[in-house]
Length: 181
Image 1: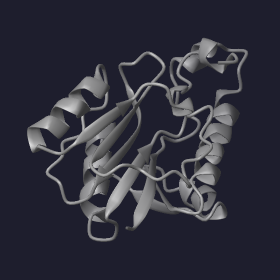
Image 2: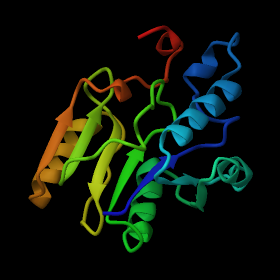
Image 3: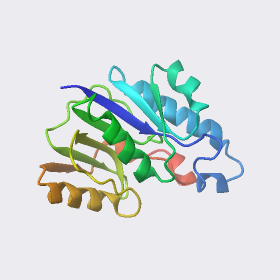
């Protein structure tokens, strides 16, 4: 079964507005380092970066990833478009946020059939999602995305599993997220 990892990324110099409140942090460098870790940890799977930023092309290709440019204005729109356009190339996609603190294993784990949702450390968000292609799935990132994605799997009648304990639950949104987990 062909599986690719899709990583949505904003321009590094504009990403993480909450983290930027701490003026002592080099947020651009932190965001780039986190994204690099996610891409490298996704090998040997094919990695597709979804972004509005053409300048990420050289970053993506320097790590063997592909850039899929998006003109979408929201994360959900960008992922919906990417999901639909990649469904003919891959049997399933792993959607992994580019701000995972501990992304190791993204390229080597064997997902369950159906949809698997990996929760954030609050148990409310979806940091990583495994989804078969060619479903009429509607992405719902934002508040309560974990519950909304589980509801969507039920609506479609697709078996799903929620993982609350994965190391992928640690993402970086606030300065405190940079402390040891």
